[in-house]
Image: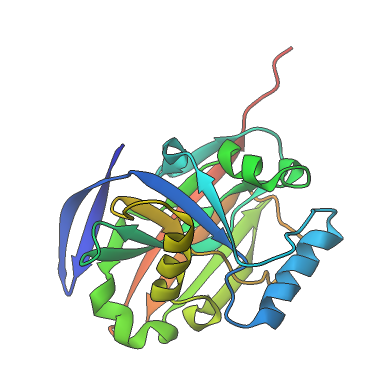
Length: 230
């Protein structure tokens, strides 16, 4: 499967085809285990079975990857999660992006891996070379807002220092995956919500900010449940 990225370097943006060989969603990847426990408690309070060991990795079918500005979902209990993304072209060439691990929360209560397959992994086409941000990685900030019935709220926000670094994340994946990571798309796991409950929103808007180089990547998508028939 091939996707189109827009590689931003300084003031230049160039198109780049990227061949997706596999996709992996990481979970519970916080550097601060108290933060991880907070997220686990959020899920457990909603009746979701949480893993005994963290972090975890979930393989996801590549066809779930999309950059569309509207996604269709089954049912009304779905929501996104802001995550940084690694697009691994090769060991020497890795791109960093931002996206949403959109998840069916009803199915997640029964089977987390299956819940990852039924809803899309959304990504922003604009990416940065990892080499350009690696030296100030912990200062990058990701966040998202959601809109429900016309009301927009801040949903998640945090520095990437809260999560495993790209090197740590790739090392974790390498331990579990046989063979090369070339062509891998890796979602990072997320940060805690600013709301007390999941918001089953009509729209999700995410961003990745680089205060050192003064730039940002943003994306957004509408969520449309498919209508029932009959």
